[in-house]
Image: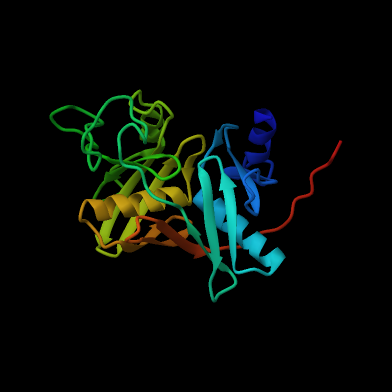
Length: 252
């Protein structure tokens, strides 16, 4: 239930988490179905970092080099690398049309939409790029994080009427054409140390805006991810996996 998920996700006194993942049999014949719950109990369609971790578990358990994971947003593929603690996930193709993100009103160019914070003549933030990579994302391009309180701005923008399904809100600094730094307010979670789908969203939007190449390193507070937006339009996310431990839940 949502109440159980909230209790389990709480940082105190429990282990705490951003997402709780439930693994089920796949109706579509994939290796498994990955059901994703946010810390607030809401269910979502995509979580890139969880998919990498689940892919690692599948491939380790079955001694295989590839896997297929079904989610509410579709089937994604995982693959092993030469390092057993690194996995890659095919996040599929990004969606840029306003109705696919979705947005509540029409925008012809989603590389930068009219959504500003602050006075109209001197906005604090403005012109975010928007995209759907399994869930909705808005990315604001900034020069520094220190000028913005994302913990205050995040919930306001997440619930903005322009986003009927809410949205993940990111601040992105482009350090070079191969390196982006990211800070993320994740819908249903809050400030997060890592968000794989946000890293993918920032990478494809940066490339689409001619800010970076199609292959970049994305640095988040929790570590680095490597994102490649291939010529076939698929997004490949690669990063490390760490097994922290096992929690046994009482059955009664």
